[in-house]
Every structure is written in structure tokens, then in C-alpha cells.
Length: 129
Length: 358
Ligand SMILES: [Zn+2]
Image 1 (cartoon, helix red, strand yellow):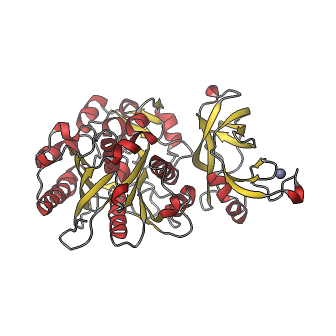
Image 2 (tube, protein in one colour; image 1 turned 135 degrees about the vertical axis):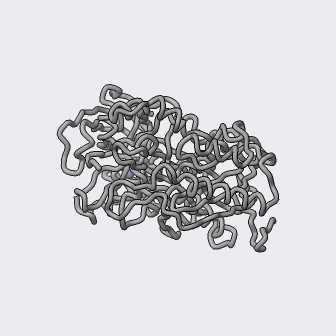
Image 3 (cartoon, chains in turn orange, brown; image 1 turned 180 degrees about the vertical axis):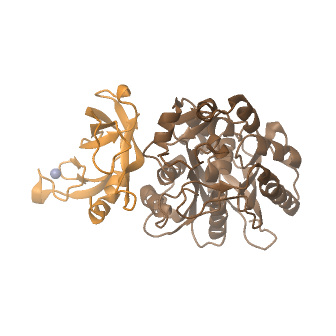
């Protein structure tokens, strides 16, 4: 991942900041600037999610992508936030402790790094609540 | 409004506090087995039974963020009021690029604030507290966030490996009297150039002057700072309900307490090192946090940090009624110590990225 690309999304990653359409009430994460239902009638505002959610489904990753070495095996899951949006995220902990429907809450962790010289990427992961 | 000897308004203190300890622990036995050391002798000598181990994706920045968020949440602080973030650590993840900007962004304090990272071995966190005290007392800022956070490194097989632990503590420092959870009446420091412990740029593990550095390092600086503060504000050990001393192991703070005339009972609530290890920049602040977790309004706490190199910062603290309001709104140190997950040496080495052999 390029430094500028990560940086642009940094606030959303650090603090689970998404958007909310005041017109229809829908929440978006990652943030959207246009409500797909209301289109031009939509009224978009920034929204900070509490981060409380539950596991929709998960998988255990054994062969990690570059920058994630040393973290395997880890659990990758789709988490549905209380407000509705779903996101793909790492769940911290042992695979044997995971279950579908499990309640989770957010933590601040290292997401990865570009080798020994590059940037360290930080952001939100989840732990069993 | 109180003023100190220099005529500066010293009605400053801790508005809120937050602690963070990783979930993992390793027992002294499991490290001793690898190096063929006698665990019972080590445990008795160090008064440490186990130490915290960071997860593979935790470092001084993530720990600082968790502690800072806990402090913000405990008192329901509007993070935009924070005008300074200072993070003390000897394990900042970048050699150049501040940890404090990561913390400031992650707690929502950006962009109108000043920030910097502090380094002074194990007392970098209390140096940050003192700086924030000055800034809020002078009216330069509304609130200051001072953090001590470390993922301490000891070379494999070195004596430090038995105690080098991970954890962090954040204090939010302010000067609105109605907001103060604990008033810091005064602070006093004692600093000299003493080469008892160091790490050169680019080196993975610290070096130290060996086991005889306790006297010219820890004991000399802690006793001078502690005596200096009590003399300055005319107090004595009996005036305090609790005392906290930097805890690189259990033995040093116990011995220095008795040298100064503090009792075992006074240091007990803050002496978390037997179950935690040495959290370096977090060490003394962790003891203060653990003491605040159980102190009553009106209780007085005496605290002295120590950092190799070397210096000590002493603080005289009085707990206010506010403690009862905010105490239960964030995890207590005792709760963070409870229910650990134990790892063996192989898993510990992986968590610490310990692939280099000294
Ligand atoms: Zn809409």
C-alpha cells in the first residue's frame, strides 16, 4: 500500500469514522460521500462508530501477505457494526475462541509495515467483547 | 489558588488517568528454563513472578493509544480540549517520527495542539507529566496528555530479560479545580549524568553497568528526590497514606521505601511489579494509577520515578472527591492484571520479534 493512500484513509482506520445519511438514516463504513439510495436528495454527515459489533463470518489466515509476516495464523472476519455497516477486519486472539455471532469491540493495533525501512500502518482491529 | 515557592500557580493535577497492559504473560520459570538459571533464586532476588508480553501487533504507540483512550473515556473528556500530547518511551516505534502524533490523532485531539516524544529511560513519562503541569499552570494550554508507554527489551539471556515488560499509563493534566481527581501539590527532581544504562542508536537491546549500578543510580536519585520534595513542602512519610517508587523489580522499591521511612502497607497498592514486570516509562505511573484505583478522597500519595542516565521526579499528590465519580468508568489496573494468557518462551520470542541473538 502506498503512503499517500494509507494516509488518506488514516482517520477512518484509526477511529472508525464513516458517514451517515440524515435523509434515510443509513450508515456507511468505509465512508461514502453520496448516499446510493437518496442520491442527490441525500444528506451526508461524518459519523464516528462506537465500534461495537458482531462477527458475521470469519476465516483463519495461515499464509500472510507482505507486511503481515509474523502475525500468522490470524483471524480475518466480516464484522457487522451495531449501526449496520459491515467491514473486513482482523480479530485479535486465538482461532479456537472465535464464533459466528460473537460480540466484538475495537482495539488500536499495528496493521502491518513496509519492511524494515517503510511506514508502520496502525488502525482498528477487534477483540471478543 | 495555591502558589509554590517560585510564585507560580500550582493548583494543577490529574483530571483523569488510564492504564493499559497487554493480555499475555510469561512466568519467570519459563525464561529461566531456557537459560539454565534457577527460577526460585531469581524470583526471590527480583520479587517478580511473571511479566507482561505484548501481542505481535502491539508496540509502544498502540499501548499509548489504548492508555490515552482509557483516560479520555474515564472522565468523559472532550479530546479537542487537549493542547499538548507528550509520550515518554524508550521503545518509540520510529527512530524519527513522533509517537505522540499517532496518539493525538487516535484520541481525536488533532490538529490544534503541540506534541513531542520524550526520552529519559524509565522516567520519560513523569517528565511529560511535569511539562504538562507547567503548561496548564501557565495557562498556555487547557489540558495536557502525558503518557509513559513501553515494550521494554532485554537481550536474550540478559538479566533484564526477566523483568522487561510492556504496558502504558496516561494522565490528563489540568488546572480547573472542579475537574481535578488528584491535586499535584508539588514536584521536585534530582538529576545527574550517570551512565548506569544506555542503548546506542541502531542497537536492538540496551546495555547496563551491571548489578552494582543500583547504588549510584536508583537509590541515590530516588532518595535525593524524595527527601528534597518532603523538605521543600515540609512533609514526612507519615503524612502520606500511600507511596509509589519506580519499580524495575520488587526489591528496589521495597528497599528504598524502608530507607526513606515508608511502610510496606503504604507501598502495597501501587507495587504491581511482581505480576507485571518493569513497564519502564509506565512503571511509576502504573503504581500511581493502581493506587488511585483504590484511594479515598483526601488520601495523600507520595510518588517518585527514576530513569537511568540518571534522574528522579518526585510528586506529592492529594486525591479529591472526584475520584469516586470517575474511578469505575475505565478498566482498573487490577482488572488489567486479572485473567492473563500465559505464553511459553517460543511464543514469547515470536511476540517480541526476538530473532536477533546478542
Ligand atoms: Zn440516504
